[in-house]
Image 1 (tube, rainbow, N blue to C red):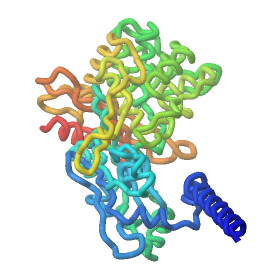
Image 2: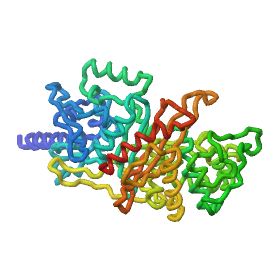
Image 3: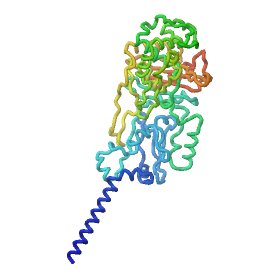
Image 4: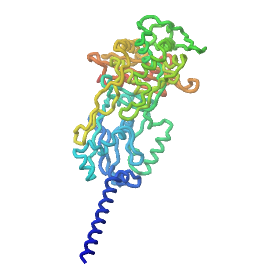
Amino acid sequence: MTKYIRRAAALCALLLVALLVNAARVQVFQARSYDDNPANRRQTIARYSQPRGAILVDGRPVTGSRDSGEQLRYERTYRDGPLYAPVTGFASQLYGTSFLENTEDGILSGTDPMLSRLPLYNDITRAQNPGGKVVTTLDPAAQRAAYAGLGSRRGAVAALQPSTGKILALVSTPSYDPAVLSGTGSAVKEAWRRLNGAESKPMLNRAIRQTYPPGSTFKVVTAAAALDAGAVSDVDAETTSPDPFTLPGTTTRLTNEVEGCEDASLRYAFAWSCNTVFAKLGVDVGLQDMTRTAAAFGFNDRELKVPFSVAPSNFDTRLDRAQLALSSIGQFNTRATPLQMAMIAAAVAGDGTVRAPYLVDRTTTRDGTTVSATSPRTLHRAMYPTTATQMRELMTDVVSKGTGRKAAIRGATVGGKTGTAQHGVGNSGIPYAWFISWAQADDSMEAAVAVAVVVEDAAADRVDISGGGDAAPIAKAVMKAVLGF
């Protein structure tokens, strides 16, 4: 009888070991596959079982959470949703997340291990940390000024702090309220269909995801390349620039919108935006130096993140001389995001240094303990400091006595560059209006802000140059907001 008891006990022990081994296999080694299985709703239910952390602007939350009482309990809410949508993005139970809601999801949802003092304990107990906070670099006054300035028009504004790369404003219009995508009801599905089908594309972040032909604002890059390469040694000396200028290897003649461009000095050509002078300068500088300078400013960078990804701005590296001439005045297939053009203005204001733009100052736990912080870093040296000094003079002339007078601010030095970018079949579309600029208070040692504005549906008056007429006043309002004027 004892023999049978021993055998039964051994069998029970074997079954117990097999049970433990299988439990370990399921709960430890295969846990991730079960967690990631679309049929497993536990993770989704847990994700929405607590309030989501806040995104802060100037210390105030612009996001929140609402208890819906549903299975996916907490829905995202937004304060001034359309104003901050290009920054926050949306957090939807049905359609996922975008922009900061996406890149900082671990912090906001509480799943980032850095939020826990004992990460291993959380893994064992399956405990969930409260959602943390994301502190942005935005200046709310600048953000509001940009949004109000664009109004009902399509366009975008990007503003940076030149010395650090902090993004002070990031606006895209038309916009939308991300709150309409929170929840699981039929209204959310209808809102998603309507927003994605809208001809005006309100969910497109034009400041970072849309590229435009930069037009004459690109002449900042061409002028910097010419000065660095020695193609121009004196900004006040005459250049050998015919008017009109025949594109090399073609019979196509390039003309100007203003008088006095034949053999004009770089200073005059920059202030009054002479196409012929800059097209010839681009050819004189050569493709190698032009592409090098463009890359140093940030063109063709496919890795830029702020922290969400930015569409790469394009300056072609394979151009014939005629194409190079057109590219040097921001035409042909040269394209840029508003953020890229703000980086150009910031580089001029910052002694030729291109700082990496960033939108998140730091992340914290719910009680305010810092989890991570962003430090300013240099991406490239775009031009020599002496060249940057000369470029600041040229950009200041544009505002003081050229095409950008509507950007002038009493009590500050303002530099700028206007631009109109042709588009459409046979350039039949209304030109995009551009203005890039920087501003430095008279009692300050450094520039406080660099701005880029593009207006898609500008009322283009070619006598006034629409960049100066439509975009410059918006840039002025943003600069005044940052300066506190």
